[in-house]
Amino acid sequence: MTDLPVSIDATLEGLQAAGYVSDRPLATVLFLALRMRRPLFLEGEAGVGKTEIAKVLSRMLDRPLIRLQCYDGLDVSSAVYEWNYPAQMIEIRLAEAAGTVDRERLSTDIFAERFLIRRPLLRALEAAPGMAPVLLIDELDRTDEAFEAYLLELLSDFQVTIPEFGTIRAEEPPIVIVTSNRTREVHDAIKRRCLYHWVDYPDAERELEILRLRVPDASERLAREVTAFVQALRGEDLFKRPGIAETIDWVTALHSLDRTVLDPATINETLGVLLKYQDDISRMQGSEVERLLAEIQQELAARGRL
Image (tube, rainbow, N blue to C red):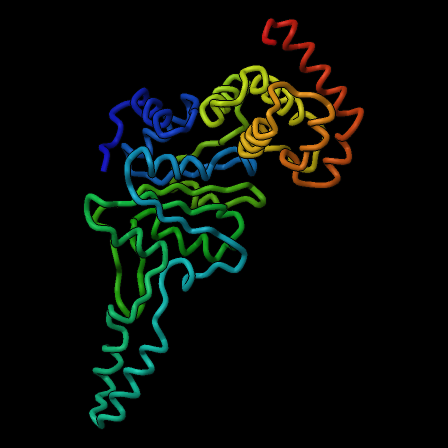
């Protein structure tokens, strides 16, 4: 297990070494979250790399990653714990068959630790000292307010209360990353317990650096043109703008096709790698692709980047 970074610069270097190109504001809030042992709430559009931050932090610190993927209807039994009801029923039947049923004792025995099924949040709290994981609570905005309310105890005190069993507190708090795509507003009570950072799309310079790191075999001109094209595409009236993951996938696909530069035909043939909605693809295909490509190539040429 790697020691926590001692400075913002060390955090930047650690992220870079783990394969994540960060800006200084993000490195600063990560450093503070680690130093202050506070959960970090990351908000932003889908595809900007929020989930990847938790994965990279796990690699950077050499800690296990425990991920809770949120969804509509997520409840305590799926996220925290539930009792092994079949095993409890067998225990009751065996006691009845033996004719030694002590109801008061049995009611305690069937809620013993061996019947407790641990879900992601409880596993994160029960990690041994020195092995505290990175806990990713991903896309919290997909859940409802009742589940948010349940999280308040965990995020403030790093503990959960099981009525039949008692309170379980982390000996060493996990590193908690909470993400939201902002499909709805998450309650202020959650945000107050966390440090906050808005993760935006990267600027052109940082996106190009990401491509160089993630797809190093792609030609420099292709990486520059793809970066400029995607940056321009995000300014169009699209239902869903492409994220960083789509940019990386597109460069990888183009490199696999042995392309070293962008051309209209190739873009039209591979738009499905970059855009995920047919309405967006239909809007951009043909003349719009040609217009956008001509504009970015002219701009890159004028700046001596081609």
